[in-house]
Amino acid sequence: MKRLSLLTFSFFFLTVSLTAQNSKEMDIAMRKLNMATILTNLYYVDSVAIGRQVEDAINGMLGKLDPHSQYSNAKDTKRLNESLEGSFEGIGVQFNMLEDTLVVIQPVSKGPSERAGILAGDRIISVNDTAIAGVKMSREEIMTRLRGPKGTKVKLGIIRPGVKGVSYFNIVRDKIPVNTLDAAFMVTPDVGLIRFSSFGQTTYDEVMTALGKLKAQGMKKLIIDMQQNGGGLLGAAAEITSQFLPKGDTIVYTRGRAVPDQAFVSSGGQGWPEGKVAVLIDEYSASAAEILTGAIQDQDRGVVIGRRSFGKGLVQRPIDLPDGSMIRLTVARYYTPSGRCIQKPYTKGDKESYSKDVINRYNSGELIHEDSIHFPDSLRYTTRKKGRTVYGGGGIMPDYFIPLDTTKYTKYYRELSAKSVIINANLRNLDKNRKKMARMWPSFEDFKARYEVPDAVIEDIFKEGEKLKIMPKDDEERKKTIPELKRIMKALTARDLWDMSEYFSIIYENDPMVLKAVELLEQ
Image (tube, rainbow, N blue to C red; front, side, top):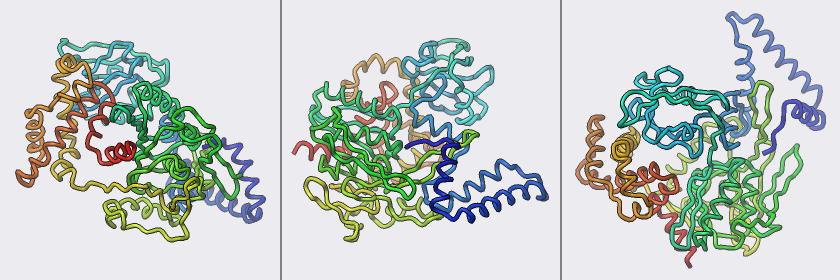
């Protein structure tokens, strides 16, 4: 997505207004808006926050457009940019809250905390002599205190298991990378899997590094997992997709009322140009994830597995405003190589109904029954190489449907998870046994093959649930809950001892989408 400054946008907007609208009508509308703002500020019975008033006006205008045009204030814009730019400035720790105390899960490799000597298991109880433990401080406020501009110093009070008293560390904040790649690992001796959660400025490099490592481990076939990938930068999607398509193949093209058409064509990258490919999607795979999926499907490059994707086919252009806030304005629609616009239907100004689409899919049975959705012939298209039938107008339909498993997790399990009983049990268990487990399981391969979650840990979860009045319906529900509890506890332990690749390696052992992908790739 290209960015426009306010000055550039003013010229862009003026050009559009002069060529596409009655300039006199525009002038009257602008005068009316200015007068309403000034009069309210001068004569309203109570004082008015003029900045907030203008923000409300902008939100009101954008709220009458499509569901994806939106305004964000300076604070939210900074947070959004950090996720897309691939970094933020802070101390560099992964942490979680155990009761009301921040526990370090892992310091970021080569980050400022690791350089200062912070270890996994440390409790951060104060920041610049202000207590953050035992005071019911929100997670967001704690993060605000830990983050800060690169080069600034922060003093942390640390309690370390086995060490008496409080130790103090002075840490110099630095740029901390934000990874979009969740996992990269070998599912079988010749099938590799990469999973990424969004498309940011660093995603291409992360994907290329992961592909290189998997090829070195003997990968012959690839699973691209984009379940719950909400999208991101259009350019990043095109750049990554090039790694899977022959040179010259169309990836995507965009078309809008007031902006030039733009086509993205594969440059024929060396990431994975010829090996077999399977793509995993679900109802939360959107935008840039649908661009990659649509290109793979339309160019007959691989097989798509899962459930119908979200259906976001609108392109937003970020427009920076002087105070650091931003408007993301929809300026075009994107089309897959076969000509499909996969944007699902919407009513302008009705974001509420649009946001309930996935719930409606569930209620209609679409997420469970493949034959519950039907596309009209007017939305029918054919793939570029083999002439297979595909449909536009509402997300991407997979080649192989995998229903949502509504029986996998019991109600008892879901309630334990929702109240953080499971995650807290994992923190307590690892906090108590971290050094012992690190000695016992130096190798993840050995851990995955032989480690079993102790029954005592599961009983601890049940007891904590009882304290919160979370009880199984009967013994049968209790027994059915145990296998999933053990699986998630083993995966969480692997995550905290190693990283997310190890977590997903365990979580996906019996995953129907992954198993189907392996089956199809092996054929």
